[in-house]
Amino acid sequence: MDIQDATRILIVDDSRFFSRIVKKAIVERIGAEVVTVETLAEARTLLEGGQTKFHLALVDIILPDSSEGEAVEYLMQKRVPCIVFTSFYSEDLRKMILDWNVMDYVIKDTPSSLSYLVDIVERVHRNRETKILVVDDSKTSRMHVRALLTGYQCQVIEAGTAQEALDTLEAQPDIRLVITDYFMPGMNGVELVQEIRKKFDRDQLSIIGIASGVSRGALSAEFIKLGANDFLKKPFLPEEFFCRVSQNLRMLDLFSRLKDMGIRDTLTGIHNRRFFFEAGSGLFSSAKRDQLRLTAAMIDLDFIKQINDTHGHKAGDIVLKGVADLLRRQCRQTDVVARYGLDSFAILAVNLADDSIVQFFERIRNAVETLELNENGRPLKITASFGVCHGTRESLEAMMKEADDLLTRAKKNGRNRVELSETRKKEKETGK
Image (cartoon, rainbow, N blue to C red):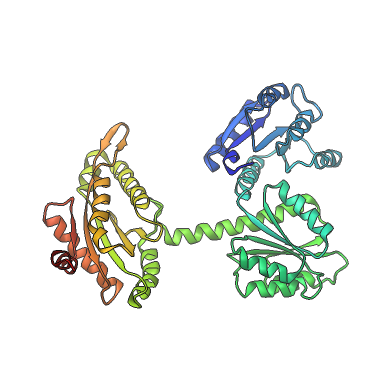
């Protein structure tokens, strides 16, 4: 299925209370469209026409018209991946569930079961864009692991040797997890881990080492000490495998979120001042070597204090988020856009043509002025003043200081205007 189909989830459960709280949690967590039905017959009605497609179904084993898992079997026949939940557990039931080749099963007997279920749904949702590299010289073993991961909606890539794995990582650095066997010709799994860690840190790429139960006992310690995140012994249970994979991917997600917290503004979602100078310093170094041209702009929202005083700080937040989103859309991917202060933003534009600088920032100024925002139906109008420093100075800080001085001039000259650096004005007047 396409990624866009990954937003529709079917819940089949005759407990309206349970379906309601699961639906609410899923919508809040991943924003998916959730449809609930109470019987197998209702599920059939939805799917038989072929018009409604679901990327995932959450199904109770016992329903009014499905007492032995018929609903699960039907949905699997329709190629709808299923997560099964049940109110009781037995070894026979576990074997039956696994024979259906469902993604996972959840025992709904405690409040934590709901959290676990929603975690699985979110993980599956994320997995559709998650690349995992399976490294094993045994094609049979690779096919087994591929089947397990494909069932969890992951993108799976295979490598038959350690060198092939290294070449694959070089070509596809967005791979997030490597699962490697120990016994391979040439370079074994531990040696592969050491090579991978020369280029990828633990917070960039997770590695799970795998070896048979007859391997020497210290092998798990060797894997982990030399760079692997986790270790599994063959043969392993499907539940154990999925749990380890999910835990490692969840840790990567956590690292990513923590990193984002350090470089993104929490209110607007765009980059913060720290990131602006980190990214800007590299661009400035290239500009000093005449490899590119830079234009720095300081932007301040006019009279936003009046909006806060009149409509409240919630309205002010709506304005800040609206303007941040506009700046992100108006600027190019090569430009750095950041929230610089409480009511101010900054842009570091790359390789703007001399004759398009005024038009570029005037277009953004006009877009801010005509931006339609509202809070509880009340329109919120805002304008912005711009100070623009074009051309490299002795430092990035000096460029920002000049842009800030020009911003002050724009404020004094009536606001809602763009003030350009004197050097650029003279060039424009003389036609240089």
